[in-house]
Length: 223
Image (tube, rainbow, N blue to C red):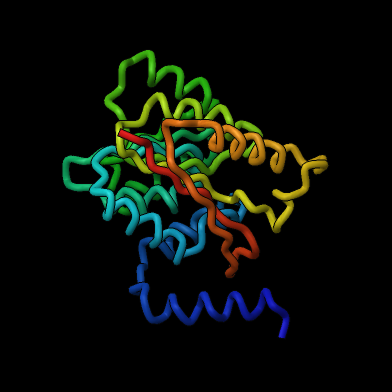
């Protein structure tokens, strides 16, 4: 059996046992597909992982860099307390429109603000506004800018904040220092920054599943 097929079967097995049927999230994926958005949302079990990590952290303020159609946004926002807030940054206008529609349908429009524009500009604006620090930050946008996103994340994070970066393995290409893929090089630079950064303690995990072979980095900002 092809290994990717087996990975998907294992995902489907655990999802059928551990994830409740969710018509809202199913509708989000359908809306994203119908609008022509790329099918690069996190897998359902990965969305649930983000949700559980945010709950374990007791997150009250979440920053998401990269909204797409709001699928991961909804998973994360559902972990917030009633008074919690999630700010999500998205470059593409169509993605913002679809995400806002999806968030309204999920009943989360009051808890989530989607900011349109280049994320680096939006991050600088948030810092200039003196925004309240975030205690959970999810980085899932253009990988060449990951090093810059990390620097901003550290500026906007509270002590003890959790920072997660997705899609860092790239089917194993992350080990290829000669890669001509600027996404791979962005992740390698991001990892080098983490290795030299005394303010955060981090690790990385490889993953396989319905989305293929990839992985994520998880770190905690030191108090």
